[in-house]
Length: 417
Image 1 (cartoon, rainbow, N blue to C red):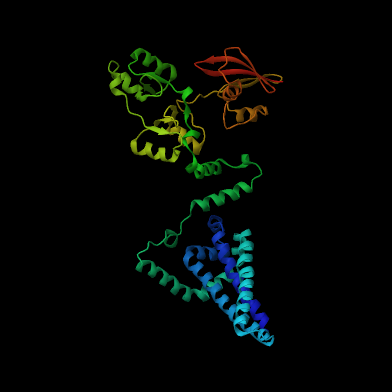
Image 2: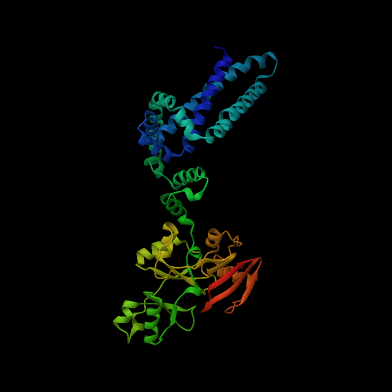
């Protein structure tokens, strides 16, 4: 083989080892773990690499560095004679050789492999698994020594060994990567089964804030401190709630809550049984409050806005719903009215979400971050609370308030013009 052939072969070695290292680090490990069920020889080989992750990466790096050294020696030897024949000085000739060799190496041996092998890393790993196994076995003794020396250096320098070195664990990135692939393979999100949807919500849970899941102030049930016990009892009966919030002076000064069981035990001195309630900001992570609930054995908290005013309440059920979906509990209104009563005419609950109304009747009501419900849509556009039987026109929709109670729009009749 000519000198050029050996140079190309060594450069190919750089491309191969650099590319396979990139593919290995970019691959979806969970896909390979799931493929183990097939019990194919290919899957068994790949599992060897992932069970010895540090060793495999060290082997690929060693192969790349050997190829680089061989490439450097061959190309420098190849270029020295032509440069000498052109009468170029030794110093300048050496500089030109280094620049040319390094440029070829960076473009062909680094940039291209990282671009190409990242496109479908799992495919590259499967395609070259046998060849990788051969190089892994051949280079194993030397790579084992280098790995052992690096671990000894960690211990001598008293540096903590990264968990990824000691354990074969899956990170959140691995899980999210698998999920994104699953979502990409589906044309419609509705085709996904419930398990995948729950899995996605669980991964996104760390980014959920309390503002995304609390019960708003207008839907809270609260009584003033020292209210007559009969009024308290009647509120428990009418609402069906097990806990009633108690405030002093105004709703922004909530002092705690009273449980129905405590109130019925000691009706005369029920205020002595008011339990303290956590006060949390609306930008607090839902995950953090969930831990607080667990440690303090609480299930309800008051959410305050940036000015310290009461924004609403949040329960453990509200937080859990962020993962598992809607859970019916004592704070939820179970039945929303959503009925078509005529041509382009509908009877809708104020609490019905705009997205749900659009889905049911293809209404194309505008969506916005400023509101989520039909009542919110009306209030946002109308800018004041409507009276009973008031007619409100918004774009090509005409609303008539059928039921209004306690500063809430309970039921509206809507006509699409």
